Image (cartoon, rainbow, N blue to C red; front, side, top):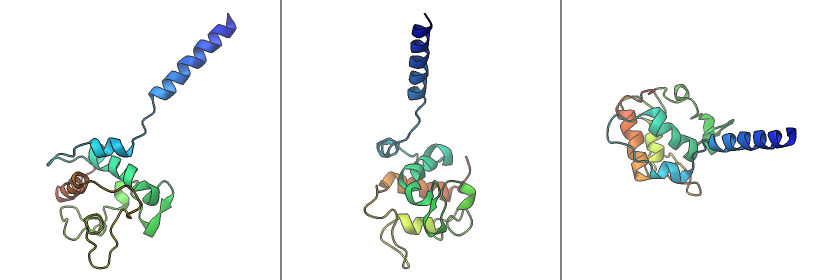
Length: 132
């Protein structure tokens, strides 16, 4: 009786762990359509950064000193200028071709941003780069 209880308990715990997997894949973010207004940082932008940018700018690795894991670390009036896509360095980096000597991001050997993602990031910045 105890052995069957343990087996059932382990099975239930395993199912719960698998069901709670919230890993977002490249395909998940590429299939998400970012709206043309009211772009949400948490729903639309952060998942893109998580999948496309964190390998170099998150999770303890901060190439060029850029940390995209917390909005407050890059919405600083330089990397992202709320309401201004023309002077936001992030836009210069993601919107190819390279501008003013800035290399385009992500690098060509990494998963690329889709046109919808680039447009969505620009809309989010134009709308004030809100923490929503």
